Image (cartoon, rainbow, N blue to C red):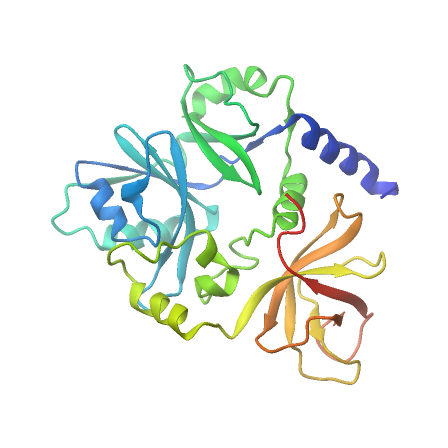
Length: 312
């Protein structure tokens, strides 16, 4: 891809070749301490926190009693604490949701969003900064890597050291990597009306063999039924016309009822094509589809549905 995308493509390829570092400090960051922290959090999320070893990270959903999402989270274990991070926009709601169910548990939840920095390194080897903060293995953006947590005030002093020799992954590059990896994001593919299996989170965020948690009954029932009414899907433009979130999907040009919607879009430097994430209704055709603005007017783009991920 040439033109305005040339610099972005070069940054992408450089990151692919030698890794990169992304500043994720704008994410909601909660810290759980106390002797009951593992047992308590295990009863609140869809993955089995008891299996999580210090220095490692696990994906999970926090759901309502009706099985719908409150947040999708990363849980990181260290020797004396559990760290939970999520999209920044769910900060107040997630904290309130987790605090609501503390009754007789010896656990404390601290909101560290304003005081703690979070850097993520796309790298096979851990960064040599263990003396500066806490390091944990984490797979984000569809790639293996490492998280580094340290106080925000210290990050200012050592930022140049922490990013030296690495590609700085900005928001645009992070979004491209995320969409190529088929990872749903809160506010795009995920919201408070999403059932985790709709977004494919049953493959990555749910342990169906663990004990009880809030929302388990509904999520287990969805598994036994074997389907949901819509499914997160990947889409590739047949030409070079750009794709955009909000475009509605139609099986035929004359159709007025859409069968899906695009939720995130980017130019894929791996495929050299415009790509998108979106939802298709169950039973919809999965060949060539028409994407156009809601309503009868507006340009139409031909897209092809495909399984995720696009690349990783």
